[in-house]
Image (cartoon, rainbow, N blue to C red; front, side, top):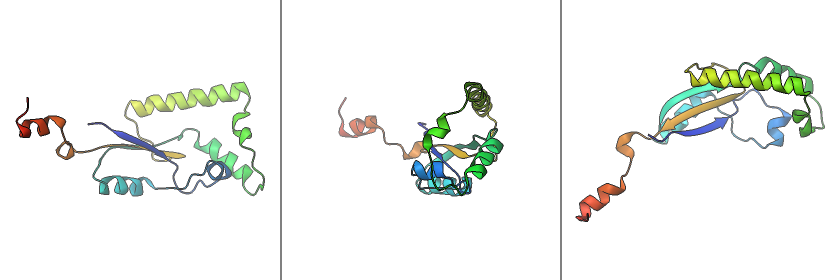
Length: 133
């Protein structure tokens, strides 16, 4: 089964960053799973991520709420030590997710899905029905 992956920010974290990057779709985990399943895919895995840093992210968004001007470069202007720390936290979270842990909340959703085996079309089956080798 070839999984597909889509990263989608959940509702409730509207901020200038998402507006600037033109995020338009927001789903709860259930809404996203329902859409994927209604398209004929089977959900293999779903989890939130950017979970361990969610309190820091929420504080940052609250601090910036109400500001009229947005400078996207502020997202990249962290001191090196802070950037390394956040990177280490994200690496730890990635390892935890890879080990099978699912987070109930985070700033984004990760969903892996695949088509059921019966829905696949094989190129070999066509050649077999035409009588070609």
